[in-house]
Image (cartoon, rainbow, N blue to C red):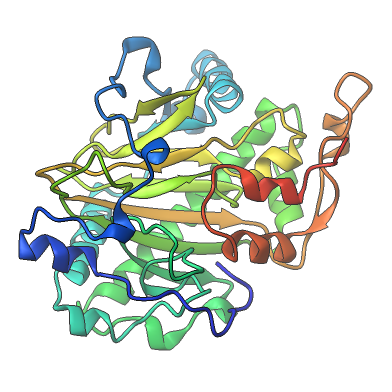
Length: 361
């Protein structure tokens, strides 16, 4: 979420993709059609047994035997180091709550366009309904509608953007976000253990952590081979938690060894990924990973994404214990608020925004 908005950005006309879908036209507006080099090769992204992202059983970390804990911590370390992505099962969040957040998100997206447009995402900001990361009139657009809200600290909230319909939307988001926040704190404790650091190092360092939620709706698209659901990017957060809608198409793909690998959702699991902030703090030991979303010809897709990051006031840089003769410092120290502003004021373009923090050779 941006610490401050930018004003007077001209983004041109942006078609609402759900409205395009309703019209059932096979024609895709020019602004959504990607250049040939950017189009997804849908036939090539075939899952393979060795290409399945790791699965972490969270209950074994929290209450497993000593052997189960050791085995799962090792698996978590390998997941962070080799993948930067993993799915978490038995995470302790009530499954009924996962269903409720999905229900209110879907109900919001199903409202008439004029109702959703009461909560507009102003160009240059990342809260409200619309498309984020659009900065010019000729920029290619993603086949996606977004609704995003700043959650913590409370000063990030814009009360005008919290919808009154569905009636239980705000209450559900509050309860869900509290549970996800607990999960993020616990995951960071275990990630610290995998690095042989004090388990509370991240919590102490982050201050009052920033948290935001974004709901993404990807309608079916008549030509999924021409468009992108969400442009390739890494996340600026420390951790990102993604809930994939039940019955949705497989849309999330991660880049590993120059191959786009689809993430097959496990029922009731949450998908976790390492953000740029953890890459910097670990001096590159755990890297953020480029990922994207593709669309489907017949099925819609819903995802609910939470971003968890340090306070904007915090100065960040590689943790001293992770810098040494064999692993020289790769990133400079910087203010996290400045980095966050840099991230949300640039279009999504792979891992380009992380250049902000890299020490130039």
